[in-house]
Length: 139
Image 1: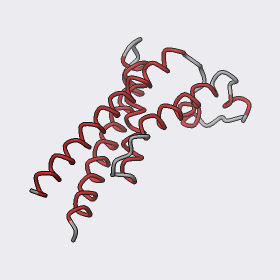
Image 2: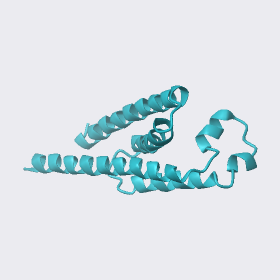
Image 3: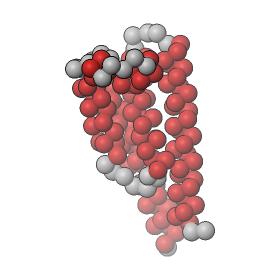
Image 4: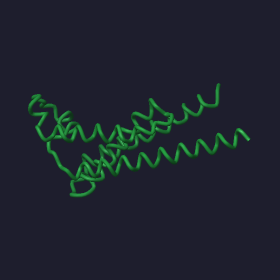
């Protein structure tokens, strides 16, 4: 098996693990945390990292655009809350209402940006680490 294939499989496993852990944390926050900081801000920051990890399972290679794409997606979802899209679509399912959101809050955009900044830093760190490893293997 090629080294790059093994590296991709290992990366996918890491991203899957991160996704599952963050998913469990998000569920715990949603069920048990009812404060004015962790649930609204940390939860929103973690959700974009969760989305990033989900996509990285399928795209384990360098994807400098991914953090920006996740942020844009999150902003679009947040903006749909301005027009209450869930009500216009007649969505009654509680889980779907929670996932799509029902209230626009401008501070959420900053929490999403913070989460995407974390993912961008992780991507840069991973890319440079892989680049250094590849350079040492070439020598």
